[in-house]
Length: 71
Image (cartoon, rainbow, N blue to C red; front, side):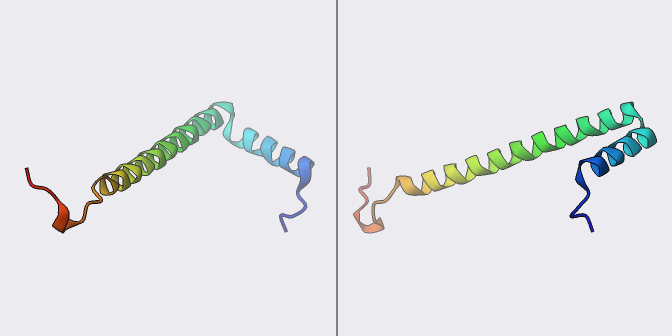
């Protein structure tokens, strides 16, 4: 059904949305979408950093338990 919309169909949809909601409402909505995308990317980067830190922490000490020197 949506396989053959094409450029004219997309332009018609964009015009209808613009008429229904107005320029101000659409720009504020796009601003909120941008903030959401930014927050999502920040969350992904933070979780990736935490995983890297955890793997680096576990990889630091590779000495077997019986061979560790006590200070």
